[in-house]
Image (cartoon, rainbow, N blue to C red; front, side):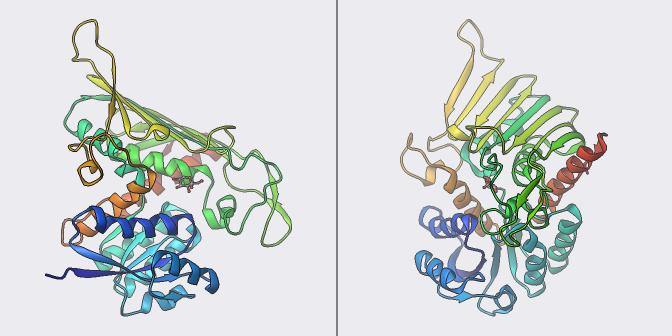
Length: 378
Ligand code: SOE
């Protein structure tokens, strides 16, 4: 029997437009999906480049105005891979037009924005999801299963960091394509909303809600030329942020992120320590999960380095043969597959409501960076 179609309208053709397009292309080839994704339209202001993108990825049409895209009758799902300042208006218009919606992270530039987006999807009752892709790296999914099985017991500590160095040059401009992450009006914040949001999403998924935070934030380079105005303008994003957190389960946490850690391109690491054991993970070796089990007896006890590539590991039975790896791109493929297979009632996280919780934490972190106080995070 022919499968029902899921006709996708993609907004944006940058880095995330590529990861999402690849995800919808690969998902039906590796996973048994209940719907067949179809790349129906891509929308971006630059018509020529949108056409090139459409031809490369197999989109059957191009739009240059997202308002026209969301009104089309031949689209079921709007996928937002545009800069952060566009998420709110596109998502709300999409769900008001009866479309399902997926959105790149962070959901809003502020929790106030994402709260309106949550209200809109809940009123419309449409499937929705935010692309916090790291949850679906098999080693992270396995960590979640191990924690839920109680392998670590009571959790005492969580620590995460996400380090990059791509904005360290003082003459790097801000704003415009590729550099909008430095423009607060467009991005909402710096490393807190862009990188720590990933760490917070994973942390709350693995370890539950965060109650309160205290943070320090820093903007190292205070002025940069703006590519759109040609003028030197103040930089208002946080270049670096470190914060302490108290989780609802009583555990304590440290989080750190910067774009000024020379030599680090995308070093996301996390560690979680419980009464019976600990887990460690590192994006640069993303298929390994390090596990210490205090139940191991004798002199050979120690950290196990689990290569999460066997057929019974999360998602891995759908890929090659045991022992052969997958990577960053496949975390998006898993997310697309789970979203599609959750459409008929099962649902799939993180939803807009889940991602709003992350925005509440990032808001509290940024506020604490200014007040120097502990701030409530939920
Ligand atoms: C920033 O450089 C960035 O691309 C983020 O925007 C992504 O969310 C992160 O996964 C990798 O780094």
